[in-house]
Length: 233
Image (cartoon, rainbow, N blue to C red; front, top):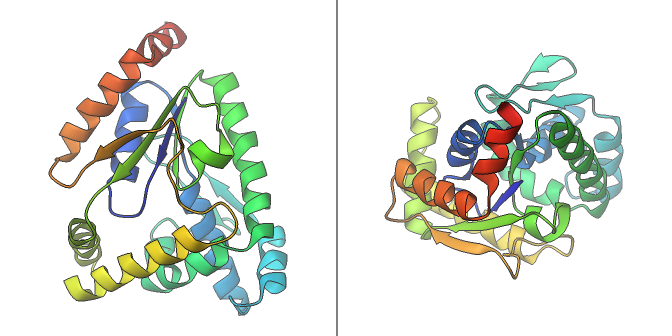
């Protein structure tokens, strides 16, 4: 198992999916789980500043998260919401929703169940998020904390938004990245931080393929490439 943590804009999602493919492993985007719950909260009209109301919506939300790296599907109430959970409304609200302890407790328990099921079926999984190595799976054999400068991360976020047809400027993206960092790092429940035994990898000056090479080498050193090969024979 590989645990990938770090703030937004570091390339986690792209490299996590590519690494899972390379390892013939499953894939879990835990951030998407918080995003789909946030979307449910917004649709319900609940006050994101009311933890009781947010927790109630989270407990009742019916959603699925795909675990195949090629095209992980995300649904809410049976409808595909993979694009909608990346929109500006969810971007703005996801940190406050994610900070609710009851929401984190609910989703961490579900994440652990998914991880156990995928490990039993496939033999390996790459999990990305903000508290994977510290809270969700502190015993993961490989923990990596991805970083990048705020300016680089903002540029990447702006490029993603523009490609998706959303109105965005670099200044908007930089403000959003900074706000998300502050909220995620200062929350009481499972704040964003690197595990003590995590490998730090700065992606500021690296292309995706270079990050993938670095992660593959780390996985090889931990014997995870060998494990993947054994599972797929």
